[in-house]
Image 1 (cartoon, rainbow, N blue to C red):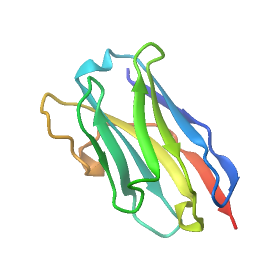
Image 2: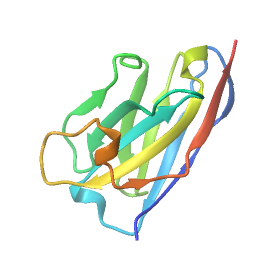
Image 3: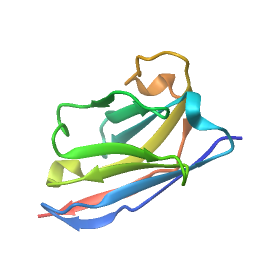
Image 4: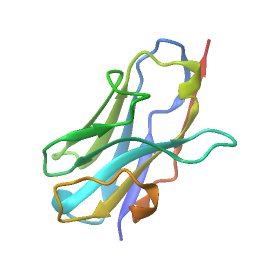
Length: 126
């Protein structure tokens, strides 16, 4: 059973640089694609960043490119999202997601991800 547990959210000042973590368990994730999504109140879930656990390219939404960095720590079985230069519009619940995949192209579509964490709230104060 795949389990994803996010942490690291909270109240952050504009311009801050928190790091979100997603502890993954229940599988060997080497053949998985991993992603971060977010959802603000009244809005649809939005793709933020993604990668293949085994390495390769990273993918970002235009809204966060150059400010956010996605990465994995194999030894800790953990996915990270380093967020820099936070803005009020980054306020949302952030989710990590996983899907077993054997392609090099990583999907950015939420419905194609099979496993989701419970989410962690990030609130940016100005």
